Structures are given as structure tokens and as C-alpha cells.
Image (cartoon, rainbow, N blue to C red):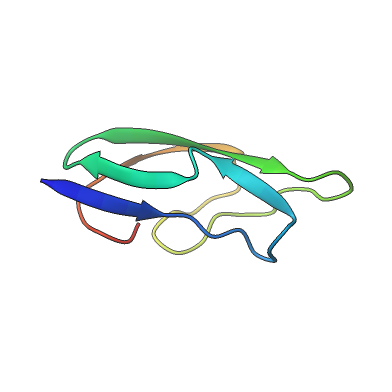
Length: 65
């Protein structure tokens, strides 16, 4: 089964996350990396992800991570 991974940067335009989201098989481990735009710094993950590390690994187990 495929699940959707949705990524939002807040505030918009202050950086990016790789991968930027997409569809993944259930059970897939996805490593997310935050990349801050120039003159910004990464603060924290929120929603289904948490912590302050630039890189985290999540396991896809439902829609809307």
C-alpha cells in the first residue's frame, strides 16, 4: 500500500526539506533533511516529526506524515 508524505516549510520560503514528500510503500524508512535558506536557520520539526536535528528518519505507516 502507498502512503502520502506531505512536507510544509513554515514560514514559506525559508528553506526546504529533502525529499520534498511523495508516495512511499508502507514500512519504508525515509530520511528527511532540513535545508535552511540563506539568512535563516532550522529550528525544529513539528507535526508527526519532532526534534531539532537537521536530519531525521521516519517510518511510513499512514497518510499525512
